[in-house]
Image 1 (cartoon, rainbow, N blue to C red):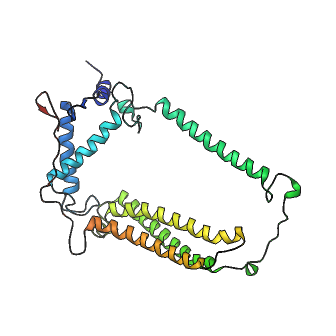
Image 2: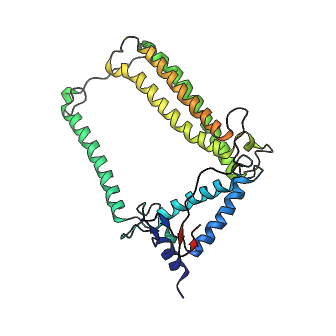
Image 3: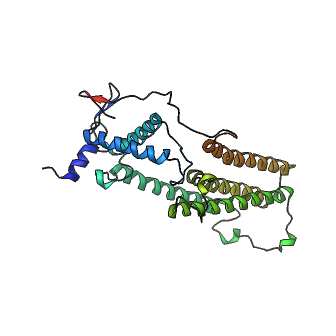
Length: 299
């Protein structure tokens, strides 16, 4: 009798995809597992309550549940099955999974190390060139300028620098929002169906809180870099272009549009437009390809 662990590895890593017909053949074990997972996701996304931290009856269309499961199944297959005539998967054995004997390939290790070496060598070369030929910060002691410090009140602030105060205010608001959303996400990990007695998923489902948390982290980071660049540029260059503060306010408006568009658009994608609740109870109009081999259905 074959070792069960070895049998699982052979089943998952054997490539049964027919490129000519576009057919992916599943084993009887995989077919049984696929059907069980379809049932699982039908309950998970179709439950009429918020016990999973999602909106009630998020996806109820059987065809959409089937297609979603097929997508998950396909990605798992691509990450574990060997490429034709190769001993690694379509994703170069990423992510590593011992249960299917997925280990990092030699190419992954070599090129990861090479990229790190190239990064460090490039930084070293940049600093070496700057230190050798820079007249302000050179290696020769005679070129080292004397430092002087001014009191805050003695430093002139340009109009564009003053405008960055609004950027830092927006950054603070976004950071606070991300922090509160992170707390909500962590509470979901401890208790999905209740937030100190409140049904939080009705107004802030887990998928929306998680998405906003990630988006805000990117937005406030980008906004802070913009503000810092605008504020430091006149100090470094010693001058500021005329009417740059108007461009700064224009950039602030663009930032507001991006933030509001991202936050509102994400919410609408989950809740639907005002007055319309997203539901998927009607049959899907899309078609799904069927895998067949030896007279049996793969799915």
